[in-house]
Image (cartoon, rainbow, N blue to C red; front, side, top):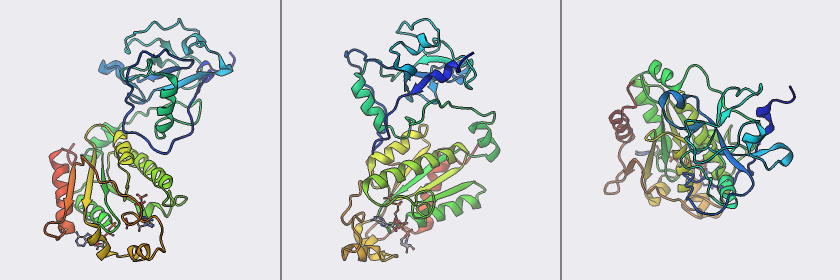
Amino acid sequence: MDAPRAARLAVAARPPGPRAPARFPFASSTAPRRAGWWWCLRDPRADSSGGGSTFPSPGRCTRLALAHRNRKSPAANLGLPPPRPPRSPAAGIGKVTGDGGCEGRPLVECAGDRPTQEPAGVVEEKASEMSSTVPKSSNIFWHDCGVGKADRQKLLKQKGCVVWITGLSGSGKSTLACTLGRELHTRGKLAYVLDGDNLRHGLNKDLGFKAEDRVENIRRVGEVAKLFADAGLVCIASLISPYRRDREACRALLSDGSFVEVFLNMSLELCEARDPKGLYKLARAGKIKGFTGIDDPYEAPLNCEIEIKEVDGVCPTPSDMAGQVVTYLEEKGFLHE
Ligand SMILES: Nc1ncnc2c1ncn2[C@@H]1O[C@H](COP(=O)(O)OS(=O)(=O)O)[C@@H](OP(=O)(O)O)[C@H]1O
Ligand SMILES: Nc1ncnc2c1ncn2[C@@H]1O[C@H](COP(=O)(O)OP(=O)(O)O)[C@@H](O)[C@H]1O
């Protein structure tokens, strides 16, 4: 046989855009479909659950373009009968053949929020914004492993989640992250801190503080945090993360309820008075440009899970702040099997 059939499908995606939206809200429209088809590899687990989820997860539809710029549908190019929408997502249109690693996996049209009725231009525009879910590479496939998140959670007797701490520089993010990490450790729970300052020494050392660098910073950390949560850990991410949209994009990477946004709502005055690194002083003197809260924006959360703020100008102690988060995690069942 010539090249694997599955490998004839190439993923068409634009380079990542600067911001990722929280969701992929495809509104239906009557505009005709243009060349290009949206398909998902069907999640084999959907068969047992009876659901119609797509793979790797609902909404992660990929526009599959055909090699040789063939305008036929992917199904036709796979030697399958042409699809007849509307179609049950559980049915699939056939199976991927060849030896590309996805043999036997059902190929389906994306269900639910699939963009079949969306003008292609609009769809592509949205795809370009989905920097964290639309891969730039082609011919890539998702591989599942035998041991899953549920198995790891059972082993650890806890549930994976992300505690995302946001706030101005000096608001106490690192302090809360470390105090919370210690508290969880004491309780025999596995947690890991992803601190913005620390990550900028390694993973993100190529990034500065321009808007697009901050966007990429948050995107990367969101993806890493998602992996830690999938590993079954309580992942504590503490970054300024000044843009609401980026935090929402990180939230959208996690299953419902497992992204816990903690807003350290401390006044600029308090943070500036603390100024442990002398950065506010430098920013005020014009020696640092684009400093959050001074000459760069901070967008406060609108619907965070936990807000910690000063009472009569007094900040709760680190231990109180951590206690608030632990109580929330307890109540939501993250600290149990
Ligand atoms: N221009 C500017 N604006 C804000 N912060 C600055 C800047 N330059 C350096 N720093 C130091 O970098 C730390 C913030 O890094 P983050 O990765 O959390 O920032 S961001 O989320 O990408 O905005 C931040 O650490 P924290 O004080 O712990 O927040 C600062 O020490
Ligand atoms: N709850 C708190 N009460 C009193 N001081 C605090 C509290 N949280 C943090 N601090 C102090 O404020 C300063 C900034 O805290 P830090 O955790 O480094 O903030 P961030 O990581 O947001 O920049 C540090 O000197 C820290 O000791």
